[in-house]
Length: 283
Image (cartoon, rainbow, N blue to C red; front, side):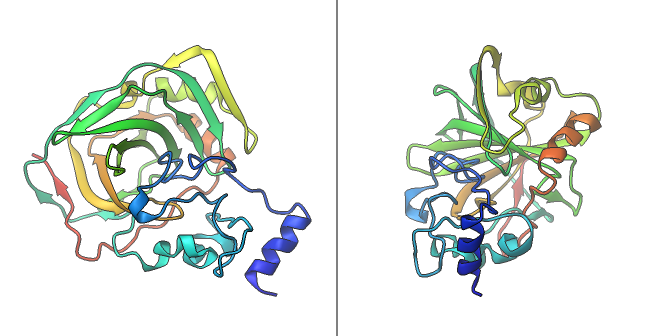
């Protein structure tokens, strides 16, 4: 039986949960990482993508393990082909790096009402319009942030307990993602707010009017960062993403990590080949 037929059979039996169904805001990097991926790289969520390489109308169900796992993403759908063929994929191991003058990340984040979703792959917090960063004169609007455990990027081969990805989009469609690495330590105040209200069931969504948060509270004081050109870390793995991984981690408690991993035991794509790309950092 082909993979497509297996998926159809499982769907008919109710054996496959379609994570992130709905808008283009529901897959990790192009949805958990954006409202949509840049138009020139082809944006389509897992729930909207073709279920077959031939371009059928079934949903391509991707996972972090098994037949729908990262090693198979490029085979699940034509729209996911870049996951296998791309030469500028993310995440990567950050090593070595080139020290240079990088522009500062100018942060202009406002408070927002908590709008949290369990899309089956992660916990995602959607952000109200009006918050942004500016890097080298280019403005990126904040769309949402979400989590992975352990961190997807590694630094010198080391992974961190968790990472938050803050997803932004510029007027020209380019995505800019800030990675906030987290090491085990003191409890994280902002994460506690989110965890207290996060839906436990896949597809669950809550808007909690009485709870407001500002993701600026998640950032370290020193905003030095690693910078390189990469991709979405989930299907469709579109490239051209401006990655800014902050060098200085913040803390998260072991209990908070456990709360996340109990819901999402696997949420990490393996590191990808650098293929000659240069990772830059500032002094």
